[in-house]
Length: 285
Image (cartoon, rainbow, N blue to C red; front, side):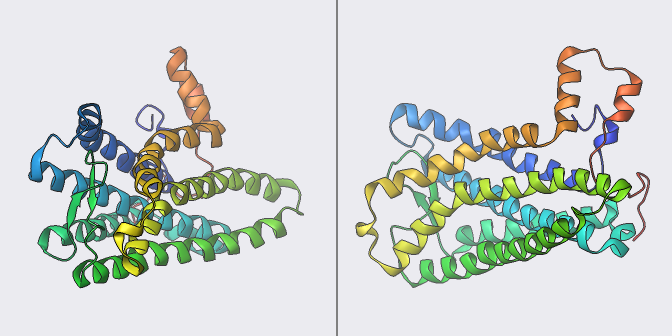
C-alpha cells in the first residue's frame, strides 16, 4: 500500500508500517504452529518449536507496544511541540525504531538465556512465558518486564494523549486553516488512540495472568483465564488492519483505488497521510 502510493510515506507512516510488520510477523511466524497444533489438539513441534514460537510472540508483542509508545510521542510532538516538527526526520524515526527492535529482542531473548523461561500453555497447543512455575527466577523476570516493558510505555502513552486531548480541545475553537489542519491531525491521532486501546484489550489478559501467578499459586488461576489471553492476543492481528482501514479515509481511498485498478497519477498525488509538514527528502540528523 505505502509502496503503491508514495504520498502516504511520511515519518509517521514508518511507525504504522512497523506496527503492520509486527502483526504480519505474528501471522507468518506464529500462526502456522498454533493453528496446526490446535487442529491436532496438542503441540506438534517439540521443545525447539515451542521456544521459537514463544520467542516470536514475545519479540513482536514487545516491539508492538514499544512502537505504540513511540507513536503516542510522535502525536504529542506534532500536536504540542510545533517547534520540533522540522526535526522529525526519517533518519531519526529509523534510529528510534532500531532501538525499539533491539529492546524487544533483548526481552524475548532473556527466557532463552535463563532469566525466565518459555513453556507450553495449559491448552498444550501454544507456548508462552512459563507462568505455571512461579519460582524467584520467573517472578523477577515478570515484575521487571511488567514495569519496563508494559507499564512504562503505558505511562508514556497516557501522558502524551492527555496533553494531546488538552491541545485539541483548545484548537477546536479556532477557525480557518488552523482548524482544518487540526481536523486532519485528529484523524491519525484518533487512529493511534484506537490502536492503543486495541492493544490493551489484546494483551492485558496476559499481564493479569502472569501477575496472578506471581502473587498466588498458579493452580488457583481460573480455567477461563488460561484460555482468554492467547485468543485475545491472536485476534489483535486481525482487528488491527481493520482499525487502519476504518480510521483513516486516505488509506481507504488508496485501498479502494488499488482494488478497482483505476487510479491515476493525479489520484496518487492526492492521497496523503495527515501528518506533520516534514519534507519527503528530509534526512537531517
